[in-house]
Amino acid sequence: MNPVQITKNIHWVGAVDWNSRNFHGYSMSPMGTTYNNFLILDEKVTLVDTVMSRLKDQMMCNIEQVLDGRSIDYFVCNHLELDHAGCAKDIIEKYKPERIFVSPMGQKSMQAHYHYTDWPVEVVPTGSEVSIGEHTLRFMETRMLHWPDSMFTYIPEAKLVFCNDAFGQNVASSERWADEYDRAVLEHVMKEYYANIVLPYSPVVLKTLDAIAEMQLDVEYLLPDHGLMFRGKDVAFAMDKYRDYALQKPKNKAVIVYDTMWHSTEKMAEAIAAGLASEGVCVKIMSVKANHHSRVMTEVLEAAAVLVGSPTHNNGILPLMGGMLTYMKGLRPQNKIGAAFGSFGWSGECVKALTQWLEDMNFETILDPVKTKFVPEHDTYKQCYELGRQVAGAIKQKLGE
Ligand code: FEO
Image (cartoon, rainbow, N blue to C red; front, side, top):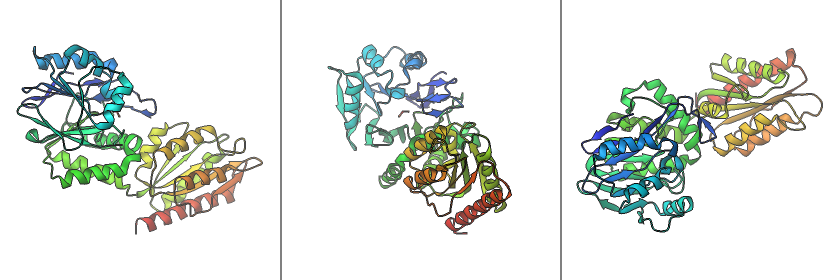
């Protein structure tokens, strides 16, 4: 895609990856992704971030068009993960910037990634400012949003924040702005990105939103390094969405995530779902064979209850459920009701193992699990249906209905 002018002298010079489907090896990106980076034409020409190295040519072509014969004087590296710093070495070797700005932890990350000896790297802690002519770069560390080195760069004269990974989404598009794009799809990709990347750092999100409010930052443009960018009224829209996600306010929704061997646990999942639906709860039944773990987490984000099912396998649970729960636990979802179910042949440890996972995640495990020997029959279906109804009652209580 060609460069896009944001303000008179600030330009998008990033790259669109239409074919990305696996983001960083752990999350699916079914709609592709975009790497945003920015060039500021001023007395000191300043580049903010880069892109994934394999998309270097797209970015370089954009940079050269905007530079129109000038060079890059300053380079801001808001985050060292290689989807944003992947072309740092290429930029530094080609343009030889006089100054390179990183957060205190960014310096350590940059050293550990690039093992440089003579790069003009400067640490810019929160509140420090650098004038580049008509614009000022004001830096704000955002440690663990989502790496220790992450920072935002604010330009007061342009009312603009380069917010790196925060507020990003995995989407490839010809549009650059959220207000040009389908709103329902935008909300979905925001949720997907938050649930799989930002969720464990929700306390930092709240702290950062509060800090922005306390500093009374005037923000007209909120520019993440992934996906669509926000301007005007959409700045508040994006910040409000992030506050909601970070607070993890539950909705009238349950997710049943399970694996099955001979379909007994699957039949139990369907009976539980019928019980939940009979009480008006929105329910998603998600087999881990049919749904990638990142797809499941997108649904879990706003769910009030998560029900987990597996047959007993080798005195434990099936391996895909083990992987799913490992992933879920790492993302630290909060404020959930949990329940377990599953079939067994002879030893029947599945529900004990599943309940332990739920307790390890601090889910409220207030209801007895349901298990069945080999194939469920009418009584088991009734128990499952009743479990669904009981979870629905607990959800209503949680939501204060
Ligand atoms: Fe933390 Fe988009 O990289």
